[in-house]
Amino acid sequence: MAWSPEICVFGAGSIGCYVGGRLAAAGAAVRFIGRERVVAEVREHGLRLTDWRGADLNVPASDVHISTGHEALASADLVLVTVKSAATEEAGRALAAGLKPGASVISFQNGLHRADVLRGLLPGRAVLQGMVPFNVAAQGQGHFHAGTEGTLEVEQHAVLAPFLDAFTRAGLPLKQHADIVAVQWAKLLLNLNNAVNALSDLPLKEELSQRAWRRCLALAQSEALAVLKLAGVKPAKLTPLPPGWIPTLLGAPDAVFRSLAKKMLAIDPKARSSMWDDLHAGRKTEVDYLNGEVVRLAHQRGLSAPVNSRLVELIHEAESGKRRVWTGDALLADLKQAELEDGP
Image (cartoon, rainbow, N blue to C red):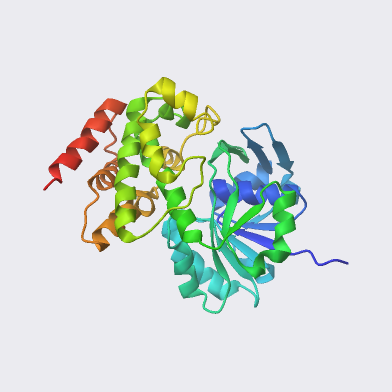
């Protein structure tokens, strides 16, 4: 009999359940590790995986191997780490204690340095940086919906060879990159919108259809691009436009933007950012690993990043219960004021 690799999803949240569920629906041997709430939900309802193009797949509860314990690590050939960024060290310690020899790891997490943290805890193992470019929302009762398009991105490595077919069969082919850092920064530039979307309290498509909200994102991206240029980092091109052109497009009048950015607006009308989801669920967000990364890089170079610093501050205020009702114009004025106050 042909060897069938076993894949473990460590972090059965929206991303973990969607990616792992698609793999399981295509016949891969997948085991999930998650929190009690999600484990109970999936054990009762199974998994339903849908996307904005109309895909609708089901994995019956009887076929989903999910647990709060770490036993699945002992037999896993590949582990997909999909926990929140703040839980990386906790996950790394569990992996160090439970992984079998020869098992490999992919970090499919937000932020730039999650794989580095895992490597520090897993010396001698193949730990690869990956990236999930699409948005996934939990709909309840084991239903996870991908509201935007994108291909799984991963650091190039020979250890991926035995697993490539499983991802392709699942409709989630792995796109390998020699320079994953450039890809990460390109994705982070797009993810700077997570904070804007969470503050807007609007679906992504509706938010991006309004110029004032887009101009807020353009300010955050322009600031990040300036910091990256001074740091000698050139982000990869993940969209039809080079990253440096996107802020200009975002600032265009609505009619011009709709005409030129049809692909950017090819989003499920109900899709929202994961940060919006976290705020509404009362969970700590990942803003420190998105906009906060821009702030940290700026500080490392003796610079400031007032727009992204302000967005981090506003999200932390919302986390603490001091959530404001914003209009696009009001947030834009607030961010411009932060720039002005930071001036020479």
